[in-house]
Amino acid sequence: MANDAVAGNTLRVAPTGPADGEDPVGAVLAAYTKDLVAAVDDTLAAFLATEVDSLTEIDAAMGGFAATARDSVLAGGKRVRPTFAYWGWRGVVGGAEPLPPVLPAFAALELLHTFALVHDDVMDASATRRGRPTVHTAQAARHAAAGHRGDPRRFGEAVAVLVGDLCMVWADRLLAHAALPPARLLDVRRCYDQMRVETVAGQYLDVLGESDAANWSVDRALRVARYKTASYTVQRPLLFGACVAGVATDAPLIAAYTRYGLAVGEAFQLRDDLLGVYGDPSATGKPAGDDLRTGKPTALLMLARQLATQAQRRALERARPGAGDGEIARLAGLVADTGAVDRVERMISDRVTEALAALDTASIDETARTALTGLATAATDRRA
Image (cartoon, rainbow, N blue to C red; front, side, top):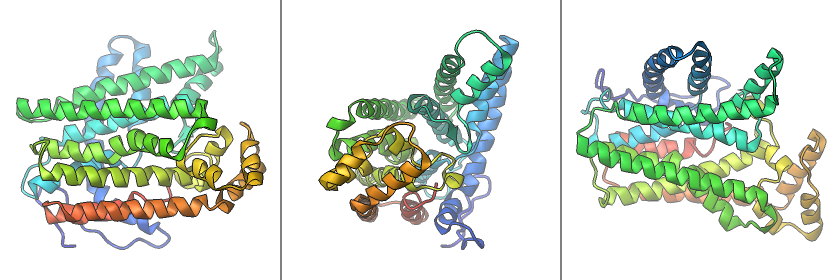
């Protein structure tokens, strides 16, 4: 693809081959996100510096709390949601529109994502995120080291909930910085609010599934994937970008973006299901096998139960929280033996095919089409 640049406005896009030893899929993803990640991170850093200073003025302790929230936002990540929002916008406006006026809107999605991650880690009792202790784990450790009164675990969870809440408020505040006409900003806000509602709905279904895994199903696991992940990872960010560009909700492009976004978003979650069992912790930043330890009813594990023989199903049902690495490795092999892994891989492939077919129907900027085509594969065939 040819280089594309409008100095100070849109992003340069110049994919190159992977470096020696580099994940080729990661290289594709980086090719379409590198400049955007830098722009989003710069926007977030500048915004958060002011916010942290403001909270520090309330009380010295608030400075540390605000810094914890800031560090959670800036701790890395692929910036997938701003990326899809950018290309959704770029698909409409082409390469001539300036980026800086709308960049705060795209960066706000990363604050929303941090809110979801921090709360999700509390609900899942996750110890690590991106290779580092989760917020509630780190805060519990600090509480214990300081010798403070009360239960360190409860303190850590309480602080994490507040960190997530603060990121949600920060997302609202940063979104308001986007230089858009008032009527369009209201439309953007409606799209953003729908994204938040669907994220909460998906998260609730996820929690419900863990409490009633024996009565869950593949269809319901896919519904969780649709609302917990597809909606706010790909579909809604794409629609959000189109809305920032001023596209009407009934435009044909909205239908194409919706179809593409649901397919890629579900494939993204299905890949996460596989990484949750078979991923390399050095790449994912999280221990492998957590879903097996908790019996989380992902589509992968629901399919394994559906496809298993009676003996295999009994073995899967005997899994208990706290199982050792050897038992987890045995269960992972058992899941693969049922054929569930192959089935999920086919489901991912089918969804990518569906997404690309949807993209073929869209009348969009050709650079954006190329980027979204590459991202459909890069986001769903990854190591982390």
